[in-house]
Amino acid sequence: MTKFRLATVVLVASFSLIAPVASFAHVNAPHEADSDKIPTVSLAVNKDEMGGFNVQITTENFTWAPENASQAHVPGEGHAHIYVDGIKVGRVYSSWFHLDTATLGITPGVHSVEVDLNGNDHGSYVVDGEKIQAAAEILVDATPMSAMPHGEEMAEGNLVQTDEVGLLPVLGISLLGAFLAGGGYLLGRRSRS
Image (cartoon, rainbow, N blue to C red; front, side, top):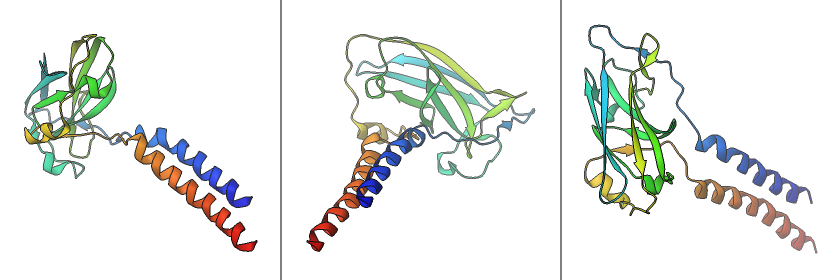
């Protein structure tokens, strides 16, 4: 019975890990921009006829450096983080990003899209403590849009990475752990009989 309880504890603990893992956010100190070369950012969002929106990010005094992501901070270089209604949906490593509203499950209606500039170490660029960012509104239609195949994004050079962990891999590992712990208990009981 003790191993069965252990399996239950493993399963419950695994479920409690899902939320913190899926919402993992980088917490690095912000970088005050060099007053001689303050980075700027603006964005234009256009509806994509195949579905979603194409976001064009224009910067000045900023160098996209995808090869240095998650490395040490170098003033004036890094990547962007993109948000929909204040929720981070990914990293952006170039001046274009396809926002696939169908895949992200964004509901019909008006939504805010925000982009902020970040150093290689994910710390936000700031001026006088305020993030260097830009925002625009989008109107998501009520009619379903076709989702772009995942391979197409990379083939077109749109480098995108998200910090989200899918629920199924975490759930699968949790269930496997519970099964193994519970299975060992059952096998142990049979061998004693």
